[in-house]
Amino acid sequence: MDSAEFHAAVYDKVREIPAQKVTTYGHIAKLIGMPNHSRHVGQALKFLSPNTNPPVPWHRVIGASGTISSRGPGTDGAQRQRDALEAEGVEVTVGRTGEMRVDFGRYGWFPSPQVSTSTTTEANTSSDAEEPS
Image (cartoon, rainbow, N blue to C red; front, side, top):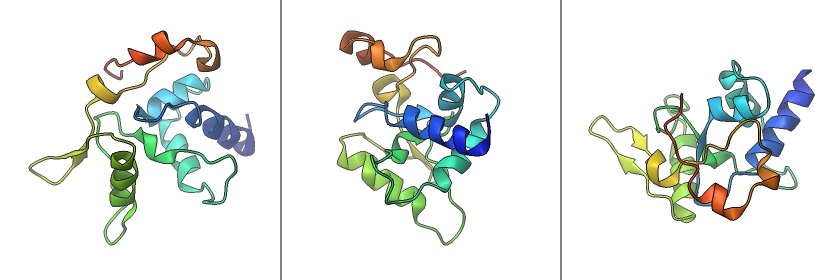
């Protein structure tokens, strides 16, 4: 899979994440058959054009610990991600050290990599929360 194919696969899979749900960079990597490439998923989302059509809900992908990844000093990406999640009804809490966290038990989306989410039923996706591995 070349870089363009990888990015396209990431964007297609992220589009499947239901509103009010989140998943991890690592889970997206597993779902597209590249389980050791979670950092590459983050890079693909970093280079996403805001004009991509159909839109890619990049804000629904967070770190394995349930935290919104920092974009570095002087950037507002983490706050924009928090704002977008909260606009969908996802509760984002702030820890003692300032990390922004989402409860995977309540908002997690972790379908099996063997099953395409386009063929799962609503009943299957409503209880897909599990601890990321």
